[in-house]
Image (cartoon, rainbow over all chains, first blue to last red):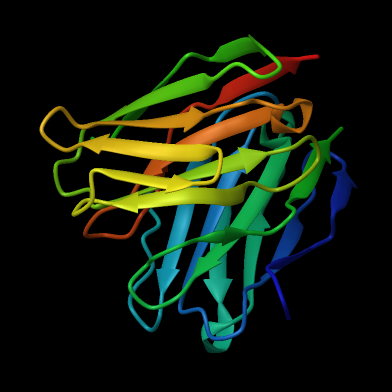
Length: 113
Length: 111
């Protein structure tokens, strides 16, 4: 596609349920990032994928969070046993070889009730 | 660890005046510094960037300066317009290509 696509755009879930957030990066981009943005806050790094290299998972806040990237393209961020503090906008970005110019999707607004 | 500090957190300017947002980074390996504009309900949009081999870059009303020695970089917006109102984020990226973002500046341009 022309840009980074994220789905769903909004997700409301009950506390304790699992959720999956999807990211379709720009075609051909080898790098993919997930960030979390809490209300009125900055961007918190979660995880980074680059080609076939092992992902940088250093930003994942707990073992309830995981992400995978299949075939070097689409990525899924999974949050298990959601908590209210997980409520935030989850942003995905992708960039080409060398990590230059990252482009963001619109984000998924997650609300845990 | 890696850190990017951004100031001010909020900035109000009169339409037509200039706005300056400043960032400081900690990782000396950082070599790429993008600026993003985020409007309400949207994802951040890249507006300008600078690499470590350049001291200044300009694109119409927007300019970015970089001082590698001091590890400072700044965004300058001249002749501000109401549509410039948004949240602006600076970021730094280095050898690992992991982007570290500042905490954001909410810019309000008053008509």
